Length: 611
Image 1 (cartoon, one colour):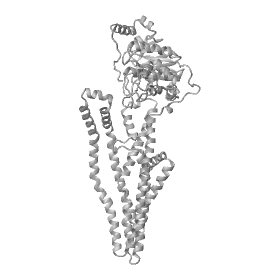
Image 2 (cartoon, helix red, strand yellow; image 1 turned 135 degrees about the vertical axis):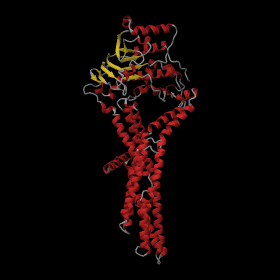
Image 3 (tube, one colour; image 1 turned 120 degrees about the vertical axis):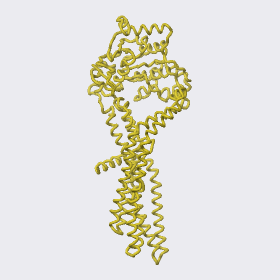
Image 4 (cartoon, one colour; image 1 turned 90 degrees about the horizontal axis):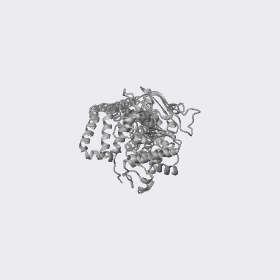
C-alpha cells in the first residue's frame, strides 16, 4: 500500500517537468519558504508574548517582537499572493501538455474501432483534463498539490521542533492524529470517486442533448419537431441519474464529519491543558506556552482540498494509462518495411481472403473477399445497401483491421507498411465527410496537410472538381470562411460542399497521393453534373488509381472495371458492357435506374444554396 502511495506521488511530481525550470524553481522556493512560516509564526508570537510579560524593558522588547511577528505574517501573505498566479500558470502548462497528449493519442490511434466503444469514450472523458464538475480531475492541480504536501511536511517538521522545545510527547500525539484525519479525508475522496466513475455515462448523454439544444444543425429539427421540452426533460433525467448517487454519498460523508472533532480537538485539548497547567504552576515559561498554542494547529491539515486534488488527478492519469493501452499510436503499430519505400507509381492492391465483422456483432460484413485494384485503373464498386462497400473502403484506409486475411500493396501487407506511411499514399472522400469551419482554401489544402500549400495544385483541383465557379461567387473568394458562425462566413449547399471535398481529394492526388477513393461523393449533384465531374476526373487523374463507389450506375459505367458486392463477396466483375451482356444483378439494377431516369426521376439530394 505504501509503495503504491509513493509511486502515485512520484507520478504526479513527474508532471511538473511540463512547468519549465525557471517557473518550477520559483514555485519550489516559495513552497519551502511557505513551509517555514508556521514555525516562524509560532516563534515570533512566543517572543511577543514573552516580551509583553517581562517587567523590564517591555517597550523595546515587545516592540521588536511585534515587528518580527507582523513581518512573518506579512511575509506569509506575500508568499501566498505571489504563489497563486504562478501556480495557476504552472497548472495551465501541465494541463495543456496533458490535453495535447490525450488529443494526440485519440487522433493518432491506428484504427477507429476502439473510439466507437462506449468504455473508451468514458476513458477519454476521464482522461481529457477538461473539468466540467467538481469531481473532474486534472493533473495540474494534483501535481502542484504534491508541492503543497512538501510544504506541509516542512511546516509539520518546523512546528514539531517548536513543540519539542516544550516536551516530546505532544509531537507523536498530534502528528498521528493529523495523519489519521488526512487518511479519513482520502477515504472520503475515494468514496466520491468510486460512485462518480459509475455515473459518467448518464452525464455524457446529458451533454449530447445539451449540445444539441444550442447547435444550429440540430436546432432546425428541434424547432420543427417541437423537441425542446422533450430534450430538456431528457437532460434532467440523465442528470438525476448522474447526481442522485452523488447526493447519497454526500449525505454519508456529511454524517461522518463528527469524526474530525475528536481527532482534532482531543489531542489539541490534551496539549493545551498540559502546557497551560505547567505555565500556571510556573513550570513552563509563558513564551513556551504561547509557542505551543501557535505551533500545534500548524500540524493539522487546513482542509481536504489537497487530498481531493490528488485523488482526482490520479484518476485522470490512470484513465490516460488505460487509454494508451486501448489506443496504441499508429507510429507504434507498424513501420515502413525496409526496402519498400513508397514508389512514384500507384501500387497493386489486393484483398486476399479478407473477412471482417464489426466488434460486438456476429455478422460478417466481408466474407472471404478477394479483390484486386490495379495500378492506374478507374474501378467502380456497386452493390445494394449493406453489401459492405463503405466497410471495404475503411479497411483499405487501415481504419479497421481485417478479422482475417490481409490487404497488400505491391505484395507487402499494409499492416507492415504502417498506417501512417500507407495513408500518405491514399486519399479518400467519405460519405460522411467533415465540413471544417475554415476558409475555402483551407478546406481544400487539408487534403495534404503535411505538404506546403501549392497554389497551382489548389487551382487545378478546384477546376477539376468544378469548384472554381463556386469560389468565384464567394464574397472573399478563397479566404471566405465556410461557416455562417464565422465573421464574413457563408454556408454552402450540400452539392457545393461535395465539390469542396472532391477538390480536397484531388488536391491530395496532385500533391502525392497515388490512390483516390470516392465513396458516394456526389449524392447532392444531379446526374448530368456528376457525369461531367467524373468525366473530368477520369481525364485528369494522371497515373493515380481511382476507386469509385456510387449508387448511380450511369456514372460508374465510365469505370475501366466494375465489381458488384453481394453478401460480402464479389458477385460480378467486368466492364459495363460485359456485365450488361452477362444479364445478372448489375444489368437488372442498371435497367431499373435507366427507366427511372428516362421518366424524369432525379435521385440527387435536393438542398437550396444558403448564400
